[in-house]
Image 1 (cartoon, rainbow, N blue to C red):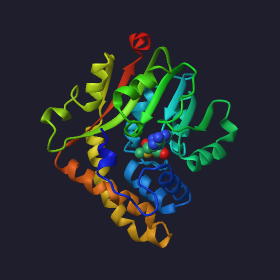
Image 2 (spheres, protein in one colour):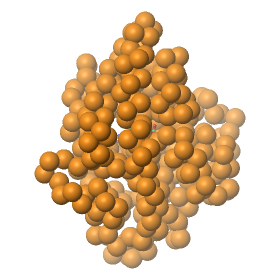
Image 3 (spheres, rainbow, N blue to C red):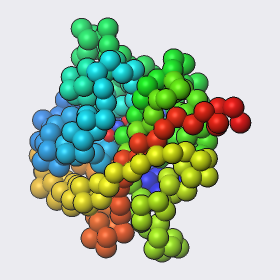
Image 4 (spheres, protein in one colour):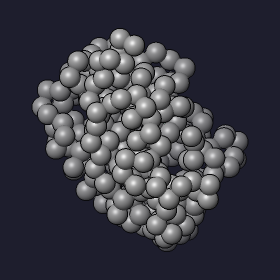
Length: 272
Ligand SMILES: C[S@@+](CC[C@H](N)C(=O)[O-])C[C@H]1O[C@@H](n2cnc3c(N)ncnc32)[C@H](O)[C@@H]1O
C-alpha cells in the first residue's frame, strides 16, 4: 500500500517517517509555541498532533469508548491525544510508539496517571504486541506504517478479547491508476482487506473533515513559516510542507476520503 510514504522524499539526515525523523519531530514539537499555534488552528485543539484527526472526529471517537475499557493505542506519538481520550472516557489505555523521545515525553508528563494510562516503546513491525486481551485497539493514522493491511489486521485482531473491537482512522486517496470506486464506502483498500478477512464492521465518514484539514494544514504552514524559522524550527514547517501540497491537491480534486472503521473481533480468524 503505502501512499503516505510513496509521495514523500528524504528530509535532511533522517528519512521522513523513520524513527529518527519522528524523534526529531517530537523533540522539537513538544517545545515549540508555533507548533502549538499550528495545531490549534489546523485541528481545533493543540494535542501535538501529526495525523489528520480534527477535534470533531476525536470527540466522535470518545463516544465509542466506555469507562473502564482496556484500550491499546498503536502509534500514539507523544500521547497528548491518548491523554485527552483517557480524560474524556476514563478508559485504561496503553499507548505504543517506536519514537522513544515521544514515549519518554508521554511517560514523564503522565506519571501521576500511571494506574490507568501508560506508554511503551514498541516497533509495530518488528516487535510483538503486548498480550492482554484488549477491549479496543485504536489506530489513528498509524495503520499506514505497519505494512500490509491484511497482516496488520490479523495481528491486531489476535490481541483483542472475544467481543472486542478495533477502531481504525485512515484516509484513502485515488491515484490515476485507481478505479473511481476506491473512494466509495465499502471499496477503499481498508474495506478490501476487511472484507477479504470476513470482518464485520461499520465505517463513519470523515471526508469533509479531512479535506478541510489539508486546506488548513497547507494554509497555516505557510502563514506560520517565518515564526517556525524564528524559533529555529524550520524543520517542523518543512515536515508539514513536504506532505501538505500532495494532500491539498487531492482535497481540491475531491480524490481524498477518510473513514473511521469500527471492526468487530473476528474469532474465526484466530482459529484459522
Ligand atoms: C502520522 S503519526 C500519527 C500520530 C498520532 N496518532 C496522531 O494522530 O497525531 C504516526 C505515528 O506512528 C508512529 N510509527 C510509525 N511507524 C511506527 C512503527 N514501525 N512502530 C511504532 N510506531 C510507529 C510514529 O512515530 C508516529 O507517532
